[in-house]
Length: 498
Image 1: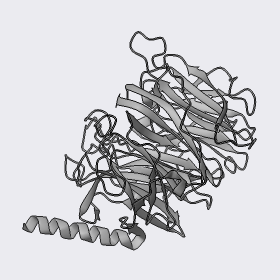
Image 2 (image 1 turned 180 degrees about the horizontal axis):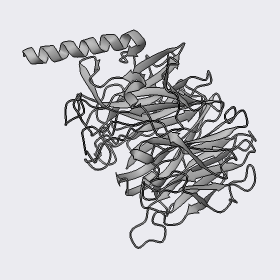
Image 3 (image 1 turned 180 degrees about the vertical axis):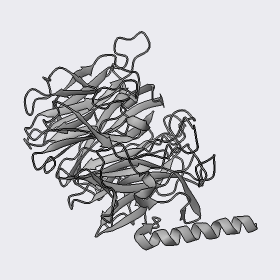
């Protein structure tokens, strides 16, 4: 009992220090409404974007996984992409597919037309190979992708004509990463490269760490720039650790904002990082500008990202610390879901933790920078993990809307307010459903509505591409997801006018 009391006192002290720099809420006033009309003006029916005979999935460490070209507001163009599943004898196994649609202003028929374009044939049966998209300043679309660290190539294709998602250049493979590459995250920065403009592309590569590439010619060629972070090994010669998980968001001008973990959430370590121990992932924030890495308060923590040296994530600004108490529950094994830039040019997003290290009880937190202060608020119960037990922190995931930062979309297998398991009347099993949430107080309280209910299968990994104020389009994966190399999910979506 004495040891337990001492641990509690330490946790309370940690939380008190944390509260000095961040505003924290544990969501006492959250509620659920019964009808989507109570949270929206209009909405479309759920529609399917992908082909019936081609199930596919995306990972969540590539951004942007979906984009909307709103240069013609009467016919916006939507693009997204997946790794397509096939068994060992299938000719579609590991295809990298891009799906597109021309959207309508009539929510009764949200898509005017749609199509599919094969970016790569039988590349890799692994959702880590899913693509990331960007709209270039000249209006052309650019897409990049990679294998799951199995080779050193970033792959790029560019649309031939602005606004046309049907005709693309041939794939260009560049070995600029200088090592095995996983994930791509391209963002155009208009003020970079001495005001000439530059594409930043965050990747995992050398040292199993966050690195980045740049392109000074709109993605035609790539140059290795440097290492962003150097995650410390959990203990010497540990083969599973030493890799921070990073999410990026560019502001379109000069900054790239990032959330990071210490490591993979299953890794544990002692304070000295000499052996396994009681310490688990915390979540951190920093930003990149002009080749330097900054803490949230503007302090430079790496004055030259272009060399091969880098700092560990622990030097970044702390967002939520491992073992922080929320009510009576200790938050453990943090991971990142989403980061975007709000209309006020501040970063915000969603992170997740396990409550009391219970893999059946994950929690989402909404984090938002406002007036120089991070607001870290309990968002919702996320439920259990999806797929196989070895990936105990694979939740259904959640996404924010850059154009409407008071709106979020989550996948959860529990009631988001009470934590009660969602048992489908169709299957008699716990299923992941999609919920939309709204806040009016920076995330201190939320009102929720279910977009799916009593489903016959899971609804997973929502993605919300940036569109326009007052309107959201949410895409998600509907089906079953045994693991990252096997998935039976289709892309569906819904348009909601707030």
